[in-house]
Amino acid sequence: MRPCVVVKWGGGLITDKATMKSVNIDLLDRLAEELRTVVNNGVDVLLVHGAGSFGHLKAKQYRLAEGRIDGIINGEMTQDEAVVAVQNDMLELNEHVMAALTAHDVSAVSWSPHRWVHGTGLNFNADLEVFRTAPHGIVVVTYGDVVPCDAPSMFGILSGDDLVARLAMEVDRVHRLVFAMGGVDGVLRSPPVEGVEQDLIETLTPSTAYKGEHATHMDVTGGIGLKVHRGFEAARSGREVIMVNGEVPGRFADACLGNSVVGTVLRVDEA
Image (cartoon, rainbow, N blue to C red; front, side, top):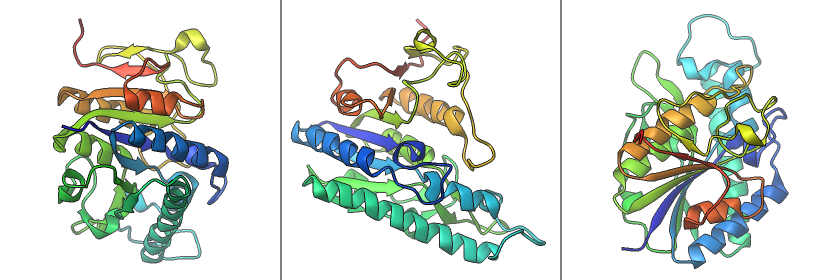
């Protein structure tokens, strides 16, 4: 069976999270070039990208992760209007991703979660058949999004980390999950602002102590903690899981191809 990897391009990697709707064009272009290398080496890719400044800032302001809220929200829009605005912003970011792939002759198709997902968290309700049956060499792209939910919440934030975990666990042909992050080489023993090279945890198990930053003033998902938890879920299903610094040229492609690379490997066995 042709090998397949699930990939997460973090929102903080492909955008400037602190600046509204700001794409790291050059970095996105290089990641797309590396992804072409992966596909040309006979590996299929299921790509999930984060929201970064195209989702988190506005979603945080209008408290979309909390669902429907009674009362006044400080802002120019209602929550319902903000839901549509964030969905449209994510479509715009996805267009940047798809354009970068097309520029490097990567055949890809995009699936917007608000059109096929119901509910949030790891147990969201969706048919994953398109990911299971995609033709070889076609990259299937999706992303974190605002999705419909049952009453009373009516809507919520589906994290890309939940998406990659489900894809890794439930698409049989997947053998590896790669998180490409921005600014850090992997999971650290100290927060990134304090960390040095020796703080990189090369092998992370459920009992390993680690620290990570979670920008609560802008982030509406779980930061590095959610990535680790969802990574362990995938590892328990028998998938290889690795976290690497996507800003360093070559590391993303090497991780996808199973080459030796600087990063953090997640393992559920304590031996």
